[in-house]
Amino acid sequence: MSDDFIWRDAERVVVLRRDGVGQALQLLAEHGFEAFELFSTERALAEVPGLADAADAVHEVAPGAVPDLAAGLLGTVGSSHLVALGGGRVIDVAKAIAAVSGAAVAAIPTTLSGAEMTGIHRLPAGAEERAGGLVRPRLVIADPEAMTTRPEQMLRASAMNALAHGADSLYTPFSNPASEWAALRGAGLISSALDEERETRDRADLAEGAILCGYAIDSGLFSIHHVICQTLVRICGSPHAETNAAILPRAMAFMEPRASDAIASLAQAIGCEPAEIEPRILALGGDPTGLGEAGADHSKLDEALDAMLTRSELAFAPEPPNRNQLRELIEAAW
Image (tube, rainbow, N blue to C red):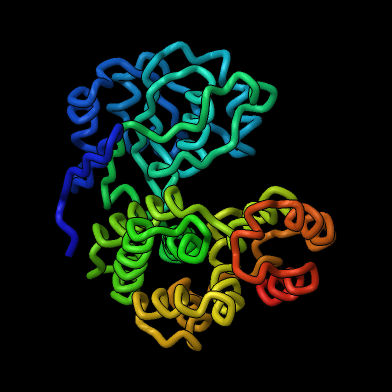
């Protein structure tokens, strides 16, 4: 069972605390966010009304692409302190705006997206040249209950997104002892929690696993899995978490002969042999929905493949895939 903790990591503080949402205003004030503007969604605002009442302004983040959403909100934000309550889209919008405005960001995640731990995000459309650099939240309030309350299949998809952060960071040229430890520790926590029935599951293990895997990808960066998923989401229109859940088992099976030591370490962390990595991740994901059923547009696959092959991160994988190999991997997940 994971314990509550405070992790002071250079310029940021990560607080994992049961009832962290209930203590959010106190924690925000303790770390310099006495006054702030709030980014969130209708669902999250309804569940945590006290934050909206305390905010100087509330910005509801609609569904859509982060660059467009951030561009639409950029001119309405005046505070030097921004709080993001929500999933990856909400947190990334706050980070994108802060990259231009110079504001500090606090993140209160409501999914296992890991966005609260990274400086990986897109920028407001049309304002890219005004950005001073990518932004990591200065304060993270990780409440296990808030992060793990989604329905089971949605939760497992979100957990596979988190697991993918650790997994994809293991075989890049930027992988290092700290990122590897975080990735494997996080992967082990996620897999052991998902092996338990929902009613008895330690939600703090899932939350800690997502935090550590988010740290791992921020440090070790990413390659084939995220190149595929990010491009499919952007071009083919499949949902983010479900895309990760569908692609991850196939991507890890593809990498097993190319990065055998890394995949062997990952397999050990999640409780299987390297040759069993694909069925093991499929089981952890709850036999995830295929890309087609999730809403991906197959007619745009060639366009997506073209875009994937232009991504420099693809070369971070040993023996990078060619077009036909990418297509075969994706079709297996369709």
